[in-house]
Image (cartoon, rainbow, N blue to C red):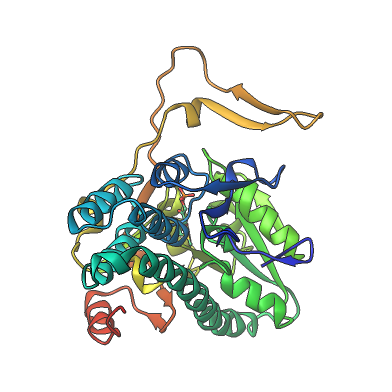
Length: 366
Ligand code: MRU
């Protein structure tokens, strides 16, 4: 995507080929800060501490982490160890383990001496693949937006989204926001309701920033506003991203997504989930019982971070001293509340038969 007229991706190799650079997303929207990651430990930390976040992007970042580690040790045992270490950085998004598995299985087939250079090329290929995948998700999502917009030709289409599933959450384009970018480029009038997404505020800080950069009309709302908007006919469609989808179509995404799905169901508003196939986890069926839900530091709930008038980063305490807080990062929306899964190969029903059939037809990974 373009930032200040320059095309940007969220991760790129340095010119000397010694490291990768990422956007340190903790500082957006107030500051554009780039961080250099040259060791697997730095990659692990950047994922765990959410310098990079979003399921597809943490997968690609981990792939580069594995490639960096291969320069030090590329035996089968070292690959297994590096994969386990990186997979542990964040538990919920399956794209992380999917990406490291793609790397390790391809590298194991090669002589040890060739693994380091092959790993770098493989990580770069995964990054490029992510861009093409998201562009395709955008095209399929655009078809949906066009048909919904045709019902209301005289006003912009109102889309509600939760968290950040834009280009910052992937290598480029995003998943849930890709159809919105494509609609905007195609001249379709769209307005986006952006859930602030407490406690990390990915909507208020990242999605709003992305949409503003692209000149797309949007309004940030407090997390609890979506139901009210839907009751008053102000939302035509909800589109969110996801971190893991079970074989029967249960959707795990940022905490609060389930409540939006319930409100959408109650108000007859279509609720779509945009996702690459790499987010499907066919090993799990009952998403509610089986998807691991990340619990993060209570401090993300008890405190809020922003900038003061001088631009200085400040952290403010919201809660009384001593009040305990609980901070689940994700929740699971049952398949029955999902209108459809917008994938790079078209729109799928969130149903086991459709998902298993689509997986059986998947081209096997390189
Ligand atoms: O905790 P985060 O910011 O990594 O959570 C991100 C989300 O929940 C996104 O909706 C999801 O990863 C899909 S990103 C295309």
